Length: 132
Image: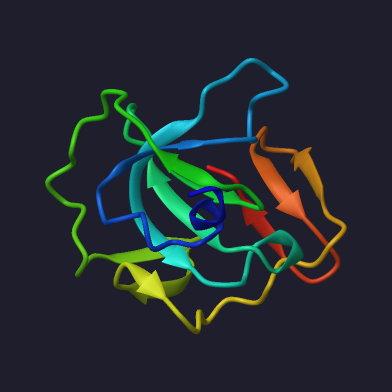
């Protein structure tokens, strides 16, 4: 059972999932409806997940393990497996599991910063991605 957590076989589109490590140090529970998995382009070659949080924000999660949970998160009528999702208004992808994403892998190490506009971004040598 534990090994299956490191695969995406147990996850499905629009399933409510919770991050197992992101936000834990801050006492935050990060969860939402899983909309897309981009294979291998997250930090350290991890999968990058797009989730819709309960307040409607589209958020990226990487270098983490997601687990199904029973927390409440409304379904948005505009989210579907045929919806085109973008990160930083770039790298459009349609579908649930994207085996060969168009976007570059996030280099490691990277830093999480707040830019001059007050937006939280992930920054590395090759790419800058907004977190929200």
